[in-house]
Length: 440
Ligand code: LLP
Image (cartoon, rainbow, N blue to C red; front, top):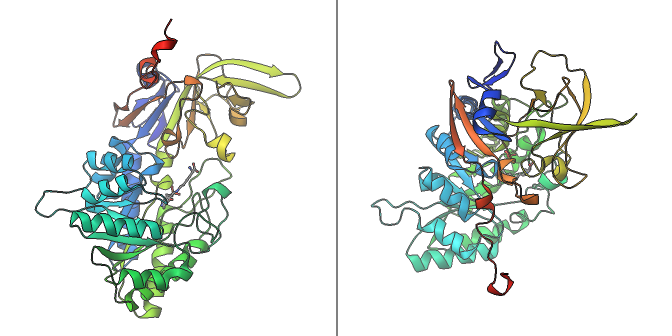
């Protein structure tokens, strides 16, 4: 939970910092990340597994939610590993100081260069450790085998499977059903395990599945635990040296009052219990369990602060209030019809009597951050805060309309540090080149 309160000036304070003062100092829009809240979420996952699961466990942060040095360093300092999906995310995790053997590399079309990058981490050191690779398909297994043998490495690999488990979430963020671009079809498992048992440059360390994101129900992850233990047992029967089951991420968070997610503790208890029961039923030793939360680790720990601009009332229909950001810093409403709520950070005790539509500044009618938000009466210059923007906001941000990406500031105990600098116009132009014949 956010370390937030209302201070004597009726302003919102996060991590001991007054949000309106942060905007004065760092400008807006501004992502404000509460360090303590991220650490608490990491600890809740870690402690949950220790409490409810008799075997070993490792929590890895799904850095696609927000990959940057500071967030990876915080996760690393809480003993978490990192889930990465690209060369860029691998480098970010490594530069943040995370040990390569705690980095798990995902993706359905990893390039040869990215695979080499993952496999070459730790080169030269006495106990060189490379990243773990979650193999998604046959081409990738063959590529890993070729690269590993040519580099004289042995690569630890997990096999990703599509479990065919439905869950109720937005179609774009559902990944577990059989018609998915990710992972092997479980019907191919015998063949995959048979192939792996003949490889000398690949060590199969376990199985992986991820069923989707922003999930509130308990049953899908319970069902997942059951099928994963069956796959794991099949790998053992092929003589593979497996020791890990990776159950993916997916726990939802509260964006609006209508959302009612499980707590982290409840989620871990549910999955741990289902895994334990399945292992006992099959008579197998408890494997090491990896879980890879993204949204639930970082989502609720950040707010975005905007400055209110002009407004427009369409008589009898609605009032639009414009802010100085929008779909470039938070593409989730226009992409997934995601709902958010908002508050006026400098009028925290004012009654929230206005129903207004919060409009972004992009040149596109659909750039609406919140339809029919309930907020206090706002005037230009007020600071509007949107909570729960830590996951898939900065990481999915763009420069649409050549708008500069916002800065991000990390707050803790009254201290504020920039973790991502605001982009400048110079940054925007850095990759543009003007061919000589176009220069006047
Ligand atoms: N592991 C794998 C293999 C994943 O694909 C994902 C998310 C996660 C873990 C983390 O899931 P989480 O705990 O965050 O639910 N951009 C979308 C979400 C896409 C999720 C992609 N995969 C959104 O803004 O809702």
